[in-house]
Length: 64
Image 1: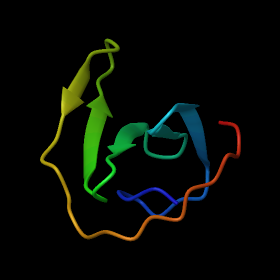
Image 2 (image 1 turned 45 degrees about the vertical axis):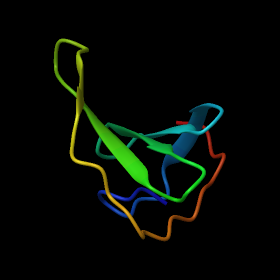
Image 3 (image 1 turned 180 degrees about the vertical axis):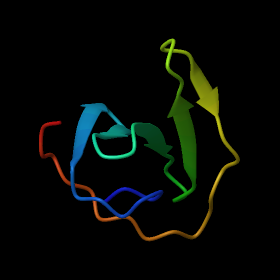
Image 4 (image 1 turned 90 degrees about the horizontal axis):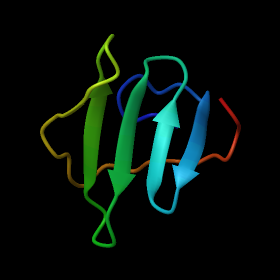
């Protein structure tokens, strides 16, 4: 489940990195449970947003 919009339209990019097809954000999940969210701009640039901690995220491997 996406930590930004709670959509289930998520997919795994690679180990520990995920993507939301609904809001077009990417995020990483670290071993200690912290999440760092990245916004994808219209030109394809990835911008890091502030890290989020203590968030429960249900991860799905549904393709985008």
